[in-house]
Image (cartoon, rainbow over all chains, first blue to last red):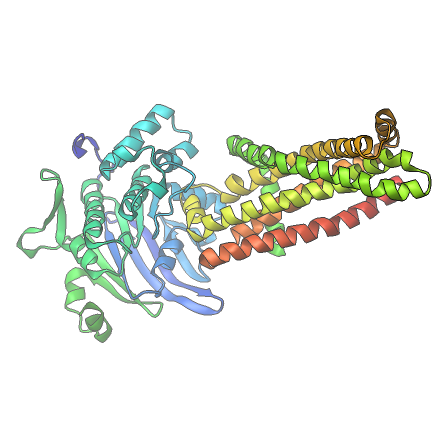
Length: 279
Length: 243
């Protein structure tokens, strides 16, 4: 397997003023008159990894779908790369989504396509030449260490492998924003660690802005306390109990943001809900 | 109803917008057209046969057994060919579309498609609608021909009718309005089958149970719509052509 160092990042240098990638302004959404999210506001800046925590059924996945324009808010505004997506038509959104990669909760791989075609899907839609397409598919699959599964169908893969293919599909276009919807949900601890390692690798290697939904606290804290060591080709704890400065938390409860801040602030919060949730 | 109308309009509007998914259209045409050929041939053949068998005994009472070919030909081309082909396509394809798209919907594959920058209506619905309309048209022609042949086989082998007389009367009785009626109906039926199937698939909710429900609803609604629209179309076309 070739070194991951060959996967040179193609990111522009970070400017001094942090660029807002995603902004929620007083966003509310209702399903059949039932409020799912109410007046949710937060920002995601370039290079940041925001971890979205909260109990099951609180609206975390809905929030990610709103961020990608897959759902429309009933109130408030959502800015993606500076554009108010709540006002964009579906055609305009389809174009904008070219800059966003999304990993779905259950992988959402296309059953009728093999791994190669699943990963290549976006490139084929963009009519990328066949050879370039094949090279980039291989590159993305090497990143998730699944280059041997090219001709397999999703039904032939394990749950963890499907998530890794979903990650490969999301990163193949080198997106400016990655949205992970419970990438470790329903997986065993070892496989979960493999997936989180890939998220850390993507964060530290490419520096892609990301938003990750999870209800597994251990995964969230691994993300905040580990870095990817390119030499050892594995995830390592940040020395001296350090924390990743670009990783911060957002906690939802009852459809509202109850916490928005750093790892330190989260663990030292005196909020009764957060204390109970983290305990 | 609003959502159904919107989906139908979008499906047709996509014909004039890029990209055009030609490969998907061919795949669907193969699946719907070639895949449905055996059931359409079998249904057409035996319907023509039983039509000859049943009508010959009644016609014989009036000394008109010789016009069995005429009756089979007109019945098959104006009514039974289009309707039975439509119902067979509903059973096989409306259910297939609803369950396939429904499964994609509940497993978030439709959302994934949108997230990957593809319009699912353009990619999934438009090819199915166009393929069903085109294939329904040609399958009906095959059903008509096979039905007349089936009626002929029964008339000649079991009823002792003369082959040339059967086929001569079957051919001579047909006029252009009959052919037009018989070929217009499958276009409408193809539209109903595909849009209803895709609509229930694309609006599936509630996991695997929802997929089953959507499939059943698609078959029931499309079947009823075909029979109801057949009556309306027949009335309108008879009004226009006078036969």
